Image (cartoon, rainbow, N blue to C red):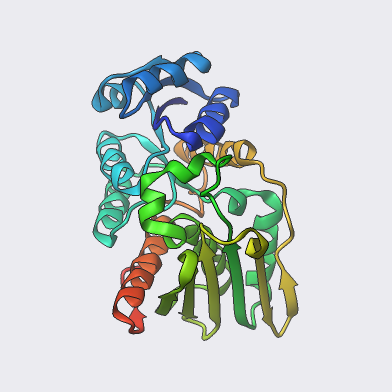
Length: 301
């Protein structure tokens, strides 16, 4: 499958470009970026070609991989989908329900393959945990803590303007929401508030009655950093297994799913429809933070 990459930032360098270049069933065609010099540099590292225009690269490929801020990703993904290209998107797929819904509609109308890169959620160990937990059922609660700091001299993501503005809710929040949705099912209500150091606390009511809590931050003190997830209920207490950080491998698995679906195989579970459901929860959480009220979730795909 011929892939074009949109984006030249740290995530494109660390995950997207190497995964595309290393995949045996991918022809890594080219790179587009908002900075042409960075696009040329990244393309040269992986034997691809830099493209000055978005539509020119879309026209040369079968699928697009996008590593750009959500508000930049969504319109490019929509252009690609309307041109009949398969999608490999980063999370969150968009900042608004309206933009996410447009993507879902475009993909459905053209029967395209799509996958959203939720990183560790794609790993076999996590997928096995999620499936076993969902099958067990009877959960009363879930808790996910994704608390860290990117604003350190050695962290390349700290210079990202959209992460500074949107914080942990929109950067690590999608991973947490993707996990609890997979185990506990759709969300019906959201309450949330934000404290010092970008500490965002989200309370979710799921359609089956379970409650999940998310603690999210990109600016926590070093001693407070943690990444944990646990579910509790009739089956006991089950913590998510710890996993190594292997983004290139995880993205390779997402590429496998897109290629298989494009060839008539099963649609990826973590597709744009699932990505839109995650966006709906995050939009409601943002509204809950701003308004101080509990917010209903009605726009999950």
